[in-house]
Length: 106
Image (cartoon, rainbow, N blue to C red):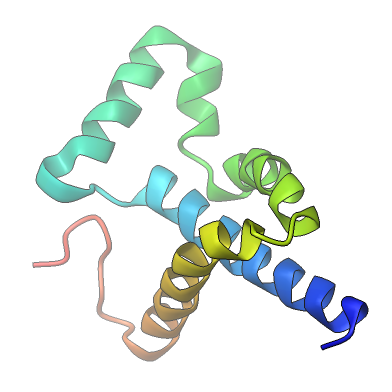
């Protein structure tokens, strides 16, 4: 596989991983509401953190910044892949199931 194709694949993985992580951290309750409680604590601690963890687009910038070095490393794919798969699944879920509520999946 050529170097450019491999780099393009890493970028695609990073995009999907950033999407999934930003959505998970900002919109979903998480197991036993751990992420919802974390967001509430962050909001209590700092208005800026509360706003950041309440906006997937805002947090996505910082998640993308954190994931950028992984696109440059050959082994970065190993770390990006699980989140990229989850990001693709999440996007498909949102497109195909209009009744799904991530904060209350039951």
